[in-house]
Image 1: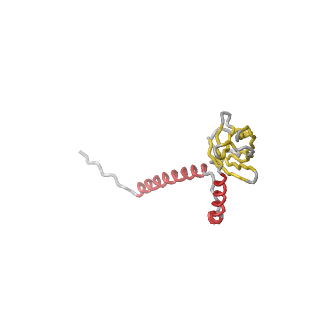
Image 2 (image 1 turned 90 degrees about the horizontal axis):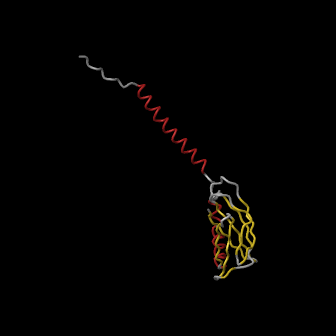
Image 3 (image 1 turned 30 degrees about the vertical axis):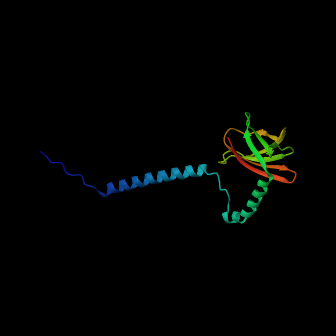
Length: 155
């Protein structure tokens, strides 16, 4: 009977293991980086220090808006037009004008400029219908010198 010789672990074996290991690591890293870049929708602010300088201004504007006492609700109708209802103290608020934009959250679709027409009883309807998908709607509602800003996700 012959006894089998034990296999020798050589430098080529170690080289194959190291190259294979790093090839897998690099493939995973490149795949994850590509996925991250393709879904990145941008920054909220370009410079956080500069944005922080306006923080008190934003708080004061939010306080003024709260003091208006408006209750604003935005929703989509069956044809994907935006309906905005505006109330104050439980009653419809007439004479409100609105304008705004619809932004795709990941920036994959073009922004949509929005114009509104009054449909009665404190309700406004966008002339433009939104394409299918998820949208962030930014609206500015005005009545005389009063301005109400609304940012609402719609789907």
